[in-house]
Length: 70
Image (cartoon, rainbow, N blue to C red; front, side, top):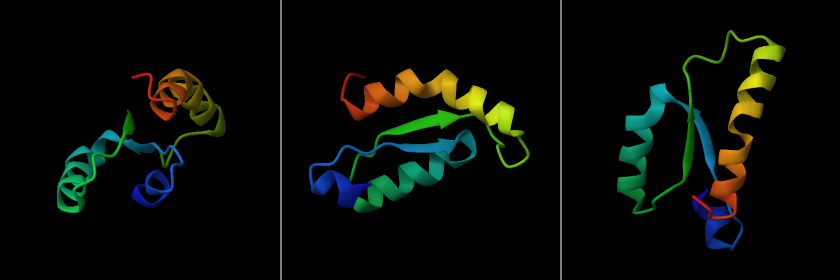
């Protein structure tokens, strides 16, 4: 994400809530305030239908983050 943002390409991370603290630590270490969309954990065992619904529930938030309308 830092590489993309550095080249002027908007980026947003999408991760489960299990990784909030790890993302914060990494952002602090890199000195880069990354934008994230947090989704409920876990996702590995979700069906395709559940994943589609999860994506649909967050698409507006993702677009807003990519267009800096947060």
